[in-house]
Image (cartoon, rainbow, N blue to C red; front, side, top):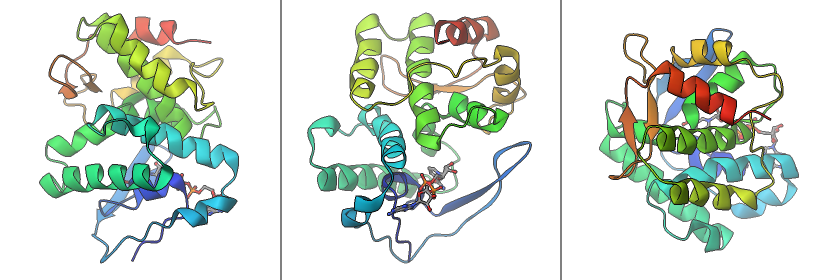
Length: 221
Ligand SMILES: NC(=O)c1ccc[n+]([C@@H]2O[C@H](COP(=O)([O-])OP(=O)(O)OC[C@H]3O[C@@H](n4cnc5c(N)ncnc54)[C@H](O)[C@@H]3O)[C@@H](O)[C@H]2O)c1
């Protein structure tokens, strides 16, 4: 029975039965799938959570607004947690071993994992996801998949959360691209991202490196 006591754990990590251990080569490279008998999310436990950890949870929560949870920012916390849990449980129920649609839960995570793996930037997971979501929106715009208004939707949602909205200072594009080529979604070294588009989120591969590089520069501090 999982009893998550962080916001990020309640809305995401405790749901889905996936446990990953980070290695120096990358995030989550060793792990297991094992479903818990139950997950108990009690938002009262969040009262003692440090503010930075709470904000990190909001960064992960933001992705659900683009995965089909409507009016997420307007919901009271207990309803927002329940809505995210329902969304993740449905995605996991449809594709437990991530053969297909579960990968959409990875929205914003290709860059986030690269930023975390390179490891020099001291970002919490949800902070890295926040940057990753803003990056993914801009990459989708650069590829002609979404318009300025859709990018503004991402910016507006994240604006109130006090999360990072730029790449960490000194972030190295070459290093980030090298790590992103090793992302679990990538096939044969092609850069692969979950991107927004006219039909909602999709796994897009291969994405041209020059578009990725230009978007990283756009998101520099
Ligand atoms: N398996 C999955 O599907 C999945 C999904 C999303 C994220 N993750 C992973 O989850 C990890 C992040 O987890 P996290 O954000 O829960 O952080 P965490 O477990 O590292 O906890 C953050 C800090 O908060 C403290 N803490 C926890 N609950 C507290 C409380 N109620 N009051 C006071 N302090 C408390 C912890 O001791 C710790 O210092 C990342 O490595 C991320 O990659 C996994």
